[in-house]
Length: 463
Image (tube, rainbow, N blue to C red):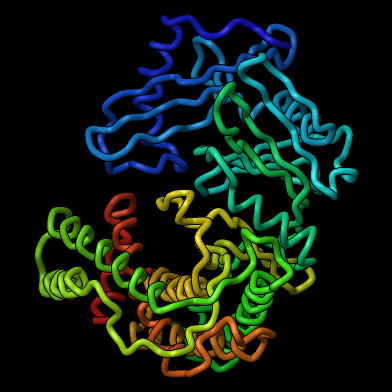
């Protein structure tokens, strides 16, 4: 299947085209930065069917400021066609994972790594590229499996693979898409890059994001008790399943990279320093991207106050609970609504803008709790765009948040991973909610300026 690599001229033509195309792609991370140059760092050519060669590429992108990024794609020489959507390439990926075989050159190999459930991989099944609005790409194999391909492949342990494998094969946590196997790209003398993870497909009716918007809209429009009851039922289920996930991560029987550790005062100080650094950067970003107003100036003053506060803002409690592995990018879009009425939690990569080291770091589970409550605010704000009263939207968010946290605390089987005192729980959750809103503001300023009012309004209220 091996074929000739791209010529220098073919590389130059392709890089010129990609310079125009990449900023338009949903999975391109740095839309707000100016591209300085592109370079094809790796090229693995595979003849996927007679006369058709797919060049698997690792493309380095440098910018006029900040660090470079690397993207995975598959192209045909002299063509703009994205071959990651081609069924012949899908079959190769699936066969490699099922068999654990290798394919390519001595210095550049695709390697499949099957997990404990790999025996259930179908031998011959139709595939299709999934049109998802997300930072990766996905391929469905019939109705049984899907392969998530990482557009920015990590060199090292992927938290998505590490955590889903643990939850599937060791913790037995049922509310996820079970892990099946992985696809890696091995280079001579370098750490492998993780290209994809194969998982079992969970029969579902979509993720919880549009459902929450619908429920919020119904309540905002009518303020009817039956609509609020349906919303709160979702919040309660999410709280219970989130607690179940965190209980699995808090197990002392987990492997060392996942097993919980004691949270100490230094962790609180590190959180305050991290938030201060983020607040300082976002204060500058807000000043350069948004016209001054009473709201923006109030938020800038709040960010400035946080930026100069590099220690914990409240008395340090004697018992902080545990720090564990967490989901790391937890929101309504990361939860599938299963056909049986339950939910499945997906995408354990962590926040894309953070480094691999940060995404694998053990933290208080309340990071995920803060993420989900912020997602309720986004759903209500999105529903308000159709119409309705802001005070009813706030009422919906507060009711959802209260029910979610109440169900979470009631379900938690290992409350020792949480601060035992309610005042400490609230203080830590508030601090993490502020940090999450600042992170959201940075993301929206860089990627979706029309969404800036949502985290901006949240920070104004939190101030």
